[in-house]
Image 1 (cartoon, helix red, strand yellow):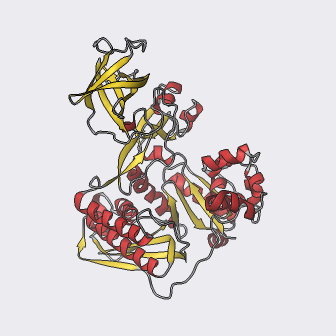
Image 2 (spheres, rainbow, N blue to C red):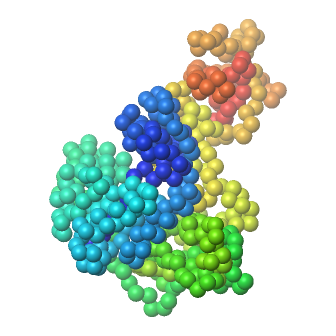
Image 3 (tube, rainbow, N blue to C red):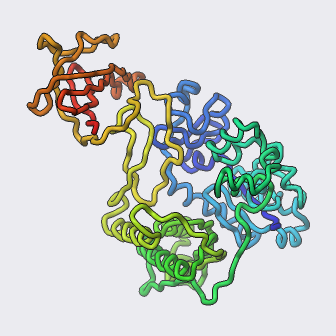
Length: 505
């Protein structure tokens, strides 16, 4: 088992946007708390909470939008100071990096001495951190988070160290919830289950989590050596003095690298990016790969360039432009494959991804987007457009959303709601009072000049949104109606005016 040292900077998304660690602060993504400081957690703020609930618990909460690019760019100096002590620093994600511990531990006088040295170095650079050493990356990460600054888990003791932890540390909410209902409460309980039964009951993801709970590597270590050099390289003549030119080249190189790996039935789990400068020095960084797209690889190169480009009087001394860029697979494993896309084989999916990258390079970051499910009350609010390559919520917030429209989902959601007129049996307009009382049962509906008799209806579902902000407050109520011609509509009334929000098939 590989001995791994992990350096963990707590609450890095909050640190990256400039919120003081001593203040109650949080970063949000689409109205949900993505990370928060210790002071905010002490007030009851938790990751995944709705912003409104977090502000109710902590009225003085400092709120910022999450900036993933800043997280990667600002973490590069942390990785750089660690790399001055020992090479082969791997950035697992912004805020967390890892390195093999055996060699450096022998050089610096033992694992505890190495752990303390690395931790002190990062703290002296101005960042709070924890450091831990254990068998494997997962146990080392939890060791870095343990105690006051981390600890060293004895060799062979990863399983015993992990056993008392709750299932929530697996970061798989659905699996953890199912296991708890089955009577499995800790990682030790989970690790005691037969691996074959776990794989048969919970599939590949469950088997992966089971290996982690047992203190083993997340995936079986099966590195293979390629028969040929699969690294890709680009030269810049004259030297590139603008980062955008290098980033565009990184996207092209990443696409070539993926093609070469796929042709050999291989997959890359760790990637090395090397940048050569006009003054002759070379800077290298290892990145955890595990399925990164070409755009994601290019973003990591951008983070490196943003951190490496000096400022002030030394800029001309060590910058001088980039003369070459190389991407090399540092750890290769056999490709276990992935499920085919709905429209065809994985090769087609790869071509679509590369085409999307090229279009995005031409039209800009917002030039091509993909729909992502998010929380919301109305059907038009439950889908947002996210630029290709950007992070999206892995768990759509399911509520509670008072006034949310339940299933079945409508077939058509117009971009601009169509005006409608809802009348009762006497021909008067149907209105909804402030207490959500309907003036009379609706009898007819008129949409785009076409009237139809209503055969069934249900509602209203009131929604009082942003009541705490006079500039954004909004009150409305929704109805579902079915007409004699077989049509069905989702209607909303706001300010006494009705409109069609969606149409059912």
